[in-house]
Structure formats: structure tokens, C-alpha cells
Length: 231
Image (cartoon, rainbow, N blue to C red; front, side):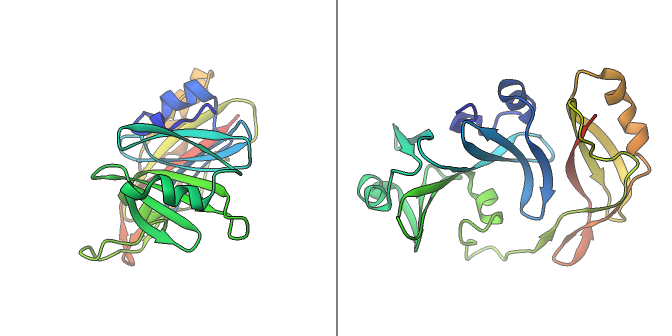
């Protein structure tokens, strides 16, 4: 696989240079998803909107895809479709954090977790999620910490867009900063295409777009979203 566990904390632009353009980009209520189709696997890279770096990876795959993760100073290889819950319980007891009916979570360090999800019928591995604990909590893969009240977040929703997402062979990814009134305040090219003129014009072209603002605990707040524009 091209997208590996060492993609965590890497700028998403560097990941795109290594693995090619994502199949899709979407900013949803649980985070900003850059989705790659990689050697039979579907990989969601959850990206921080401010630093544009990868905070978590969410990987679905069928056999024979594998991924290597460092746990307690040793590297372990997880094979989708064959590694099972029984082996996880035996191999990783020392790092165990949470147990779910069809999954297990393991503490990698103070801020990072590994979540293994298994097919309910076969108990074989179907999904691996790894990354910052707060990001995995937001994806509802981990329970909220009892000493921190959870807040519901809703991402900005486009109302009027001057440039459609398109379907061409060139791809530009931009970050759009939206204030609490739904007004675009900045447009930044995060992953450029090979059409420099198109990329340079996006700031002016997207400046008058409008959005339903993001909401945190039902209150409108400033936020950023990513858009992939194909042209």
C-alpha cells in the first residue's frame, strides 16, 4: 500500500505527491476526508484544516492487503481478511485500551490510538483506524473522555458556488475559510494542479461563494473546509 502508518503528521500535499490525487475530498461533520483508492483498500486520511496535515487514517480493505504498525516498540503486520479477533486479544493484551463487540482499541502513546474492527460474522479484520485520539473520538470510534463534555459539530454547507467540483483530469484541492456568518474569508490552494493559471484565479473566483456556517453546540462558528476541484 502507498498510504502507510507513517503518513500521520505528514502534510497532505506530500501524501498526494507520493500516492497521486485522492479519489475524492469531502469536509464532513466528523472531519476532513481525503480518500485514496490504494491497492484494493479504501483509505480515508483525516486532515487538520489549519496545518493541512494528516491526523488519522481510516482504512477498509479485503485480503490480501496488509499494513504495518509500530506497537510497544515492535512492528506488527495486520492482514485484512485473515487477522482475527482471537489473535488480537492474544498478541496485543499489553496495549489494550477498550474492547467493543466487534472491535478493539489499543493505546500507542499519550495521544494516539489504534482501532481494529472485525467482521461480526467471521471475526476477521476489515478496518483499521489509527491516529490522534481526539480525531478518532470525533469519528465515533472511541468513547468520549468522561472529563470532557462532548460538543456536536456540523461542518459548513455550501449554498452558492461559482466553481463546481467538476470531473476533469486535473485536480486542485483548496481550503476555504468561512466565518460564522457563512462568508468566505480566505481561499488557499493546498494541493496545486499542473494548471497554474487556474489555481491562481481560484481565490478571486471563490471569494463570493456563500455557506451555511459551521455550528458547534448549535452556535455558528468560523471553520474551514476542503474542496477538490477537477478541471
